[in-house]
Image (cartoon, helix red, strand yellow):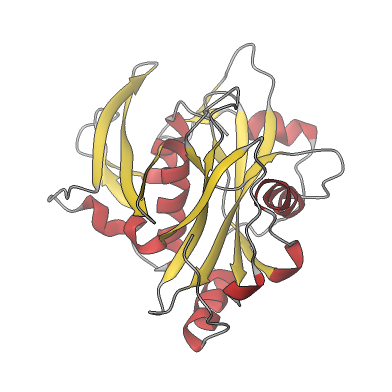
Length: 262
């Protein structure tokens, strides 16, 4: 994982202020049971709820932990899950996991899981906003929590070997709206998928870090695309691929159809 010795900067302060003012729900409280059932269903582009029969709803949170590198660019901390994990082994993920009864809210969940997985001390993370939740096929509502590390030197990564194979970081900018240009480069690609008659685009990002190769995709990619749009104040629209010909669908609605879950 790259090491940077730069602390608080004017640029990072501006990013933090922008995020605090972002038009997000900013409600850190855990939803009550009735709300969980409603929010944990998959939504189509018309915001109609599609019930998931037989799947118990649950809630989770992930931490989008940002810091500034030596060139003034924002980077996000990511993990590669252990190959011993029972689900999504070896895949890239944001630090995070399912809500526990001891968690007062989504922020508590994200920070607790980050500490357990990568040794991130919650006291060095300043939470600036919580994005609107994502909903997976497996009836899990995932709340993305955005936090900032002002001084990267304060973070000494300690991976939990039972859950995490490696810890690395990537530029947040690679997930910005420029991915929707007509020209595809060798580090990103997209595939058309279908689930329950709904077609959607699944994005893949290839990333190199310290001579290691990672593929960032599925729910993690969708969350980071959304985060980049908020941070950089860029539009977040793409053409639909079969829902309604000729319409535009917000990408957060498309990513509710993603198969993988946390």
